Length: 292
Image (cartoon, rainbow, N blue to C red; front, top):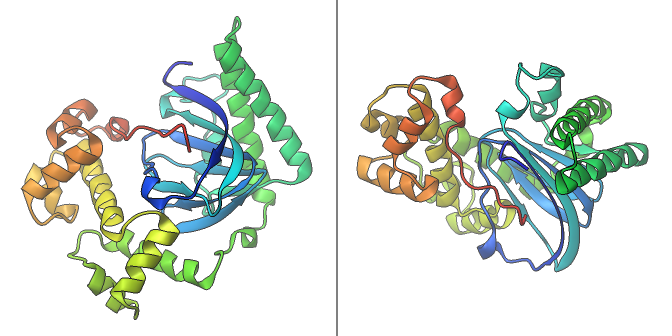
């Protein structure tokens, strides 16, 4: 379909390999439905054990990553769409449609009845995008809207306690990630953060990688690049000030890392977004990995 909406249905076998994990951070909304199998989904600052029949909602510009514990077969449906795809000009638009992306938990655990309803909607959506018969664009948008509305209602019925941390280690790691998200502008080293939380640097490094799929420095840099992108798109600050506010100690390091991550220079990113425009925050993103 057009780039405003992408729908991908995939079934494959995976072998756990943290080194091959994919970083996901993009300006689109994302919906992930696990048809079969099980996996671990790290979203922003916590880990979810996702099982067959779960829906995962990822808001714009949220860091997330999937990982697998064992060699396994899994099947999933992945939907990504731009904010412009369902905007106030759409006749069925309502802010309610975006409620699933604004909840404190990113996973909806469905009852059997809800699963059957969701799977029927997804089957229709996949079929419309695949066959592209007359009027498929209109019907696909209607099906997506129905899915979002239904998911919002289901979330209100889902007890929040269903999504506790998988283990005490996961809970502690979540607090560490929240600390990084809040203090990215400070000078932070692995040793400093480990000491702050009363653990060894080696243990933090190993646990951080195992649970989140990111290396410690890799995650911290991604958070800083994301903040820099927000400042580039939404302000007229000079590049040196953007780098400093995002936590980079030197302008050169900021430029190199930003280009490597975003595949464009900071100035190219700013020019592509448009200075000072809030909508410009959607101007740049990393590619979405369809294979996850």
